[in-house]
Length: 226
Image 1: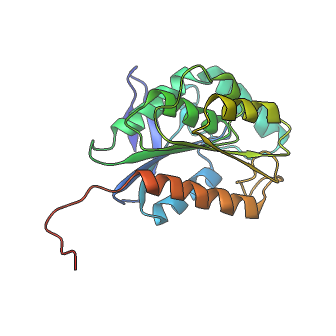
Image 2 (image 1 turned 60 degrees about the vertical axis):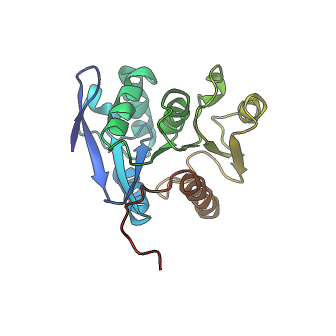
Image 3 (image 1 turned 135 degrees about the vertical axis):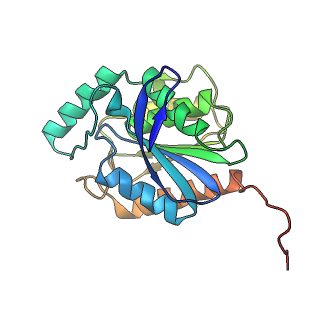
C-alpha cells in the first residue's frame, strides 16, 4: 500500500494481516527485505494487521539488501541520507494514522528500527506498547521519558552496543523492561551469522506478552459471552 507522510512524502508500506490489533514493524538498515516481511507475516499469524514502512523510499525506492559487508555499507549510507531519526518518524506516524482510532496499535523495531521504536514511545502516546531490538542509539536519547510501556532486547555480546548503554537506560527509566541475551547483534534474524534461535524465541514470546497485556482489541457488542 501507499501512504502519505505529514511532509507530503509518499511511501510504500508492506501490509499483511487483518486482525483487530495493529502493529508497526520498523526495518533494519537493510530495507523491508525478505526477513522483515517474514517477521511481519509471523505477527500477522498472531492476529495483527501489520504495516512496515519502507524508510528508504525517501532517497531510493525498492531497496532490498542482504547482510554482507557491502549491504551493510550501502544500508548505512542510505540511512544517513534519509536522516536517522526525524524523517523516519514521519513515516512511522503515517502508519499509525492509517489505523482507525479505536484500533490498539503497537510498534516493534529492529536495529535502526529499534531506536525508532524508542522514539515512538517518546513521541506517540496513542501507541499501546513499543518494543526495540538492539537499538544502538537509545542510550543517547534518554532526555524524554517514554509515554507508553516499553521493552528492549539486547545481545550481551553485541560489539556495537556497549553494556554501559543498556545500564544507562535501566537507571534512567526503571519501568522499562530491558533484557540482555547470550547473543550478539541481530540475533533475531535467521539470515545473519549472529542468529541465536533460543534468544530470538524468548524475545518474541516476551514481546507478544507485553503487547497483548496492553492492547486488548476493541469489543464489539452483541456477541454471546457463553
